[in-house]
Image (tube, rainbow, N blue to C red; front, side):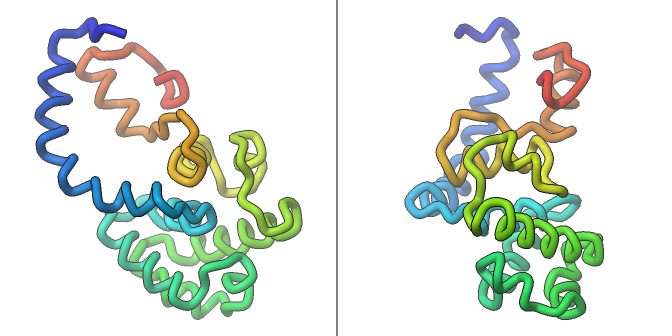
Length: 166
């Protein structure tokens, strides 16, 4: 599909030069051995947090608890302490516990492979479900958050009202 807006290609080329070298290592590692539970939990921790913080805290958490069962065994206070620097740590701790419980009860410990099933889990929205589908299962979906929606609209690349439309 040809790009209709003449500014899109130059912008994509600039972004490609700046970010591709940095991202290839992480993306290749994730694609070689995707771990759906870790991808889901990291995504939930990333909400309103810097990527660097999310990566650091996710690594720390997964040393202690890398399965839904292990997340549920950690006390809420200990979990809050581990994820504190991601911000909104009390709510995120509750969400991690709730999501882990639902995964065990509704999906026998397996991370769902469809958007509908993922979004049926309380705390998992469209962006998070698409991140899991793309990075854990290699599905052709685009995770779009408010920024990925707002910026192309401001640049005139699209004219949409919601991230889902974008």
